[in-house]
Image 1 (cartoon, rainbow, N blue to C red):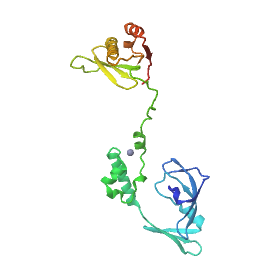
Image 2 (cartoon, rainbow, N blue to C red):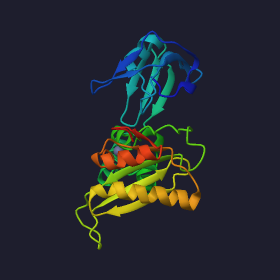
Image 3 (spheres, rainbow, N blue to C red):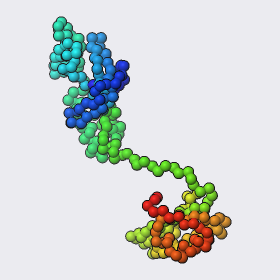
Image 4 (cartoon, rainbow, N blue to C red):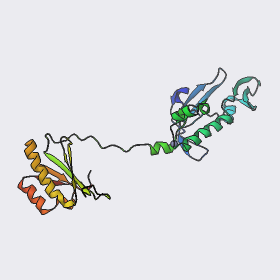
Length: 260
Ligand SMILES: [Zn+2]
């Protein structure tokens, strides 16, 4: 089994779709192929399993397929033809238990440092990474915790000219009042330009008066007409006084609840 599909050729679909790992999980097989290790060692039916950290060789399978025996020494192993006892291959231990210790230390530091990136850990502890490449480390917690929400799509149906549509909302009460005693504010946001006016209030019912003032200011300063006021269903926008004012000035009131 290999994690790297470039090591096999040709890559073809495999009848085996998953393999089980020692922790009981299953992981997908994306294909299979052949691999030539040496002139005398050619392996067929290599499964490509991208989630593996190492390439794995089944000793029982290789002895059956190649009619060979495998002898292990502490630091190396040899492959011999079963009939001739001629050596057909050998392998040296590359990254044994020492490598595993370093790997578990890297994971320990990853968790100790609040899931620091492996690239950063490699700078801090270069000796731990002597043989391990950072691409071999994949942390599920990091991937889940650092993923982002899908963003709102960019909406292009903005008003064509300033002040046609004004958005308004009220916020408060704040725990701490301002020096002038205000604990609320109301915003007026122009849909076209996103220009925002923010007015402080001592009570919520000042919205009525503040909108009238704001509306007059727009007319005088910018010679513009407000056509639509858009707000939530908040009571401060439902006062009969404000409703009457909007009607008199031909302003349509859009209300939308639970919508950002
Ligand atoms: Zn992590």
